[in-house]
Length: 124
Image (cartoon, rainbow, N blue to C red):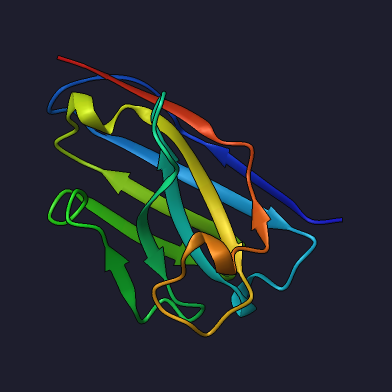
């Protein structure tokens, strides 16, 4: 049984940092491209950042470039998203995604498994 579990969300003030973690079990983590997506109230889910199975290739949406850093530790089956200089517009539910795909970056269409999400709220 595959489980994808996010943690690390919470409340932050603008300019502060948060680090999200995602632990996956029941799958061969190193064989999956991974990504972070987010969904704000009333908006569609959008991609934030992706990382290839090896960790050698990363991708960031313009909204995340220069502020967020994605990384993974295949030995720990864990994905991370370091979020710095947070803005109120970063407020959303953040989802971890696993895709058995060699495409990079992955889109939601390639995702095989989703986590339940972790809420990030940034106040001004």
